[in-house]
Length: 202
Image (cartoon, rainbow, N blue to C red; front, side, top):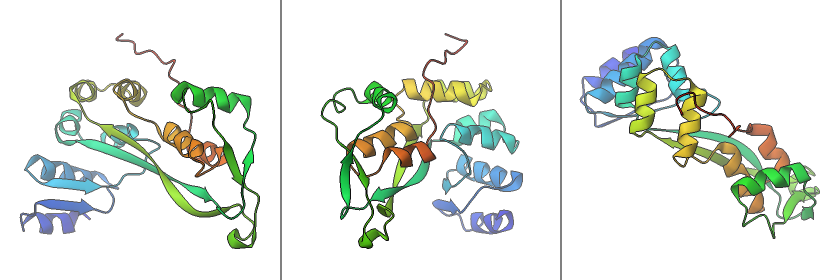
């Protein structure tokens, strides 16, 4: 990617799309390009949105450069969609109900959970197609300051949640409450975020 990026920059593009930032050289060119007025989109392999900052730091991108150039991160996980032809209500575990109620107390009261029992339309899997869960972290002054001061990703994640970030798991529960996917699918792809974590600076 690095040599192609250098060639692209000579054409002075407005927007640059990089398939994946996978090494130090590509990361450096992408950051420098964004700092010279180019809008850069790319992908990274991380567990969640805040971990993208750690991944860039691992590639030796300076924290002040990350804070200056990064505008936001979208994390995505795919879950299977319940087959509409064999969809049926199921009982949810009490522990799961308690967790969902923390985020969606109003929706949980009359919630109906579903699962596909399996039919010829879905090859007896109970699922047909996939949908995406999203976690969107928008950079703000507080998070930029934490990046510059090299705060760990769990502290940055905690701050982002305080600022309104909806985690992959929370987005997953919203899809479960909408009857689109199952509890099992959310548990498969999204880890639980411990909101009891307290930042040492607080």
